[in-house]
Length: 130
Image (cartoon, rainbow, N blue to C red; front, side, top):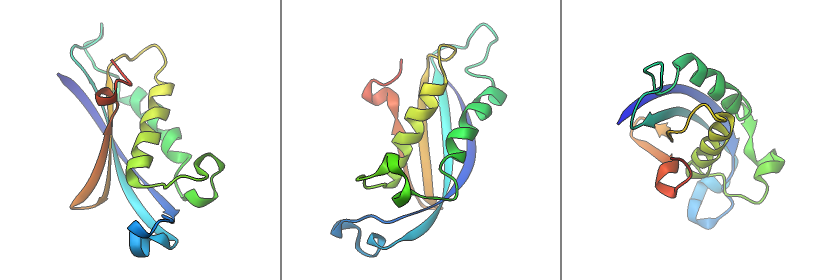
């Protein structure tokens, strides 16, 4: 299996309105380090999984739409618990939609909340890619 991973970060604010989340029910900020990994069983005719520059051009607007945003104020997230897991799935789905017909491999999104805690969404495990 081949893979290409790119990394960026976003700063967000949100509140998680459920007693499960204790103090995180209050509005708080987070800086997420976001890894997007493209992978495939074989390379394309150019011997790449995906061109790194093209991958960055796809990912950048997806992350920019979330950067410095309060998720509580975003209409598309209304009624959702905007956990890191939810956010990873959202990023995955947006990136996958922008890949069009040129990429048919898998995409995994990992969000690192701290140096020792992170979440991931791997669309291939849910059948969303491949």
